[in-house]
Image (spheres, one colour):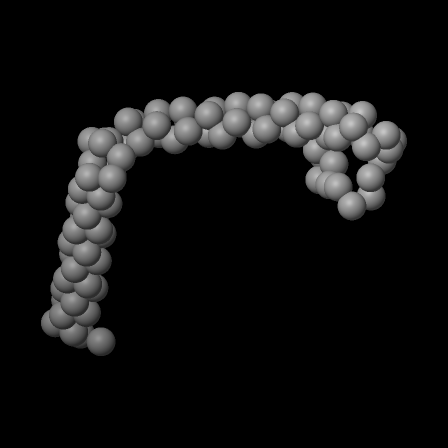
Length: 93
């Protein structure tokens, strides 16, 4: 392969890389726009902070649900007089 062929090959590879970079940049712009429109986040740090807050809320809600379901289950057993009703799922399921 002579120097001109190598030059053409490298130029084509560089152009392909440039096209991929342009596509990636466009995708990133679109994702940032979507974050702003759907969640009010204007950068990745805000999105990470919001994600962390939502994960904390989810954990708190799951714990609250487990606690309230366990109370329901206890009251159910008291009302029905059964130690375990096999048809009722437990709070751990």
